[in-house]
Image 1 (cartoon, one colour):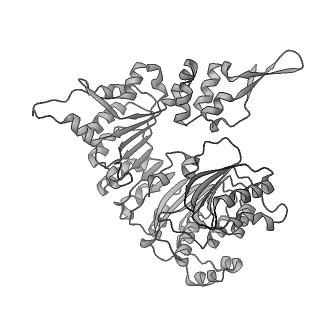
Image 2 (image 1 turned 90 degrees about the horizontal axis):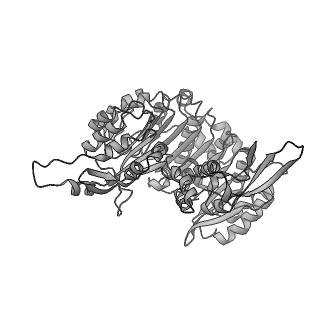
Image 3 (image 1 turned 180 degrees about the vertical axis):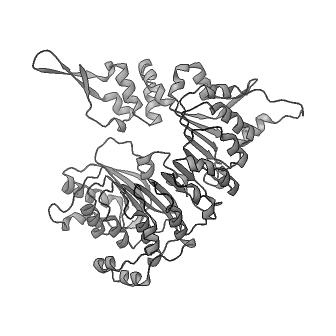
Length: 535
């Protein structure tokens, strides 16, 4: 038989590297010796070429690949049409239509490859196209409905508005969508058994939920800006879902709204503007024993005290042993949680500024993660406030040796903090931190042989200090990597504005990481709200 030996990670492909790669085909003959021949990718079998291109999730790479030749075009098209966006391009005598669906009607063999559909609604465009002075005018039929119904393998469908260019992150992006559009779409998707993810990133109404209830196999629901009535209407969905997300949770003003319905969730995401205190959140999480992923907004302005005053006084001493023995968390809260399946936690906080408030935050986080087999932790400041009290967080992280992803870009770390991380987290693969002093990167010099284990594949760095210019970081990081892993790796600067910069270090030169948002790079664009979402 013929096998392929792949010397690189195919998920990290770019158009340039695809053109230049060589693959080694090893053919076993009847003789005892093996003959290895080097074959150019130009004559690679079509099936293998398709498999390679389908591993890429970068649209630009697939688009450039499709321009190489006819064979590459046929191999790249299924990947290009994995996700389609429906945006009105014209209105004919047959009603509204969409370019992507027109193409799929022409090339029907691409229909089974469509997995995700995004309905990008332009309200002003819709009003302009449907406004008529005649009262007896009837809208023409919409041929897009039949085209959409002919896509058999849709797994995810998203309704959203085109954001205003002036205020792309404002609440104006959560506008209503005409009910007839919702009704037509629900009818077209009603026979699509593979559809299990529904993203309603607009201002939905209870009537919309009723219309979409025809979609029986939905297991993941994301809401944009739901009203309290909508949260009540989606309760049956929540009970049958594995994943539930609210991007803007202003209507979530009471535990009663959703608490009795979250028992089966494996993923829960609550965005900003909710009215739940830290203790309310603990009571909510008490009901989610199957939870594997948590992404929650922690609003310090709503919080109540969870930590004893003796803990705070001991923390002032900054003695690690005294701090550890002095921690007296609320026993009821600690015993009430049993999140034994929790692997990923993202906490986005606002209003946390002083020492006692950070103590409350990290104590709350310790309660949530106690006993959980965590592999990923992100602590993000919504108001970009820096945390200068990393000690309790470092002690918490030292108890999570299985951690693989750590994203703490607003926590000020010292040499001892980095030494603690790399001495305790043996499986850490991705780290995102802020630098305030270039000498922090010399943490390894005081470590004894074998004390540090360095397995990072990606390191995200950022700084806002003139005491830590990028030009000084480059040689210091190079020396650190040579000492820790024997090779310098690859460092690239991504943004630079005065003394503020962001950079990405990777263990290999080829990577699909963009370097701006670690969460998006690690978990994809559907990892709930990321830094791009602006909250």
